[in-house]
Length: 112
Length: 116
Image 1 (cartoon, rainbow over the protein chains, first blue to last red):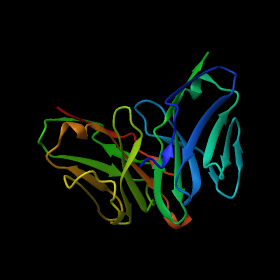
Image 2: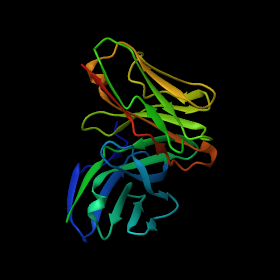
Image 3: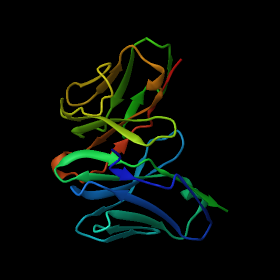
């Protein structure tokens, strides 16, 4: 049972444009959501997170939006840069319990 | 070291052999996790340690897989009688005290296991 789903395995975006990566979840107990970025041959690194009490969190070029009623979150990158090319994982955890559940990832390619 | 350290970085073994993968977490991180990523797949949770105990080992695929953590620090993931489907990148992560944690994990670079 895939509790965190990223339905788009890949995405290509022109440099300077907006990248939108989507994620859906099924477990209503999740109350903290994270995005990780992974380059080849490296471990994932934390990018940005959002608590379920918020619907938006912004950090520079990266913004995460949470729609709890739809159990959907998205990561916006604007403007996209070639160095953003990586696999992005959506992840979620339930308060007080530290198992972090990851999605299958979306490979973003930013074309110069 | 400053980050999570994993060894070996690459391991090629024959089907049926046992392998041990090691993880050295960030100093002071009480929580430690093992995940694996098979080719074309996402990150699959294996086991979580809080200190030396494992409150959640629900992700271990079979009884051929085991893990231990000693001294609240180094962890070893052991796979017995390896099978070809065990081929994957095994990722270790650590985090601060879960009571204060919001789920941010710090990952190592992984151990790539290939079973021939």
